[in-house]
Length: 172
Length: 311
Image (cartoon, rainbow over all chains, first blue to last red; front, side, top):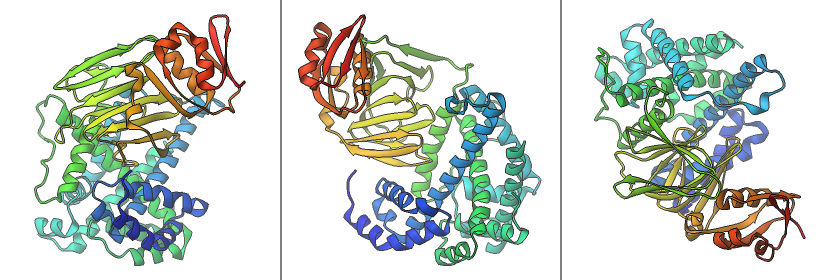
C-alpha cells in the first residue's frame, strides 16, 4: 500500500483523539487493534487528501464500530438459527444460497418499505434522499422547503421505526 | 434489550446527526458516549438497524436497475447531480456489487467453468479481459453481464480491462472484490480468500472493509480479518505460466497448491516447518521427488500420494 506521508502525519496527530473515540464507542480491550484496522481503512481510502481530515477519520472510526457491531450481531443470529436446527455444529455454517438470500432481502425490503410508509410520505422520502442517496441534511431541507430541525426529526422518526423493525426481526 | 427511553431518544438524535456529511460535533458526541457505556450500545442498535435497512434498500433498487425492467410504477430513483462525486461513485459501486451478490438466482443463466487438479483453463471475456482458471477450481459467469464472476472454489488469475463506469466485480464467498485496472490472483481458503495484485488495484468489500489493495500487495481475508503483506508482482499468478513460488508457507499450504497445480496428490505431515522456494511445475510432474532439495523438505511416496515432511 502506498504510504501517504501527509495522511500518516495527520493520522498520528489524531491518534489519541481516535483512540479516545473508539474507547468511548465501546471498543474496550480491542481499541488498539481497531485503531490498526482504522489505519488500514484510511490508508486504503480512494482520496488520501480527504482522509487526512479529522472529521473523516472520526467518521471512519464510527463506521468501523458500526460494521463491527453488525457483523457480531449477524454472527450471533446465524449461530442461533443454526444451533436451533443442529446443536453443536456451529462451526460448519454454509452460506445461504443466493436465491435464498435474495428472497430474505426482498422480504426485509418489503418490511422496511412498510415501516417507512407508515410514517408518511415526507419522512420516507427524506430518509431515502439522505441515507441512500447521501444528500446532506441542509440541502434536503432546502429541497423540501422545511427547516433543518424538521429534517432531523423526520430522520429520527424513521430511525426509530427501523430500530423497532430490526428488533422484531431479530427476535422472530 | 430495550434501552431507557431517554437514552434511546438521544441515540436516535445522535444517529441522525452523525449520518450527515456536514456533521462536525464529534467532541459533543464523544462526551455523550463517555457519559455512560449504555449510550454506545443504544447508538449501535440504532445504527445497526438503519444501516441494514439502507443496505437492503440499495440492494433491491439495484435489482430493479439491473434486471430487465418490469412495468413498475415505482422506478429506481435517479442519481442526484447535487451529490458530491465520491458518493456517486460509491453508490454506483455499491449497486454493482450488491447486484452481483444477490442477483444470481437459478432463474438466470450462468455458465459454470470447472477444472480438475492439474488442469488450467483460459476463459476469454472479450475486450482484452481474460480469466485463467487454476486446477481443481469452479468459477461461474452470468450469461448477461460479462463484468461479473463468482469464484466458488480454487484459484484464478484475472486480467481485466478497467472501466470505471462498469467495474469488474468478483464475488468469493461473502466477499466482493472490485477491480481498479487490474491483474490479480485470487484463491479460496477455508474461511476466506487470498488476493494478490500484480497490476492496478483491487478494492475488497467496498461496503465493509473498503480496503484498497495496490499492485505488489497480497491481502488475506480470513474470518472477517484482513492482513496485508508485500508480494513480488512478477510472482502473482505464476502458476498460469507453469511456476509456483512459496515464501514462508506451511507444508499443508504447499501440498494443497501443488496438488491443485499438478494433478498429483500431495500431502503434508507435521505443520511447523516454513517453506520457501520456486518450482517449475513441469519438473514436479515428471519427477515429484525433485522437490525435496528445492523445498528443503523430505518428499516421499506413500501409495498414490507424495508426502512432504520436515527432514
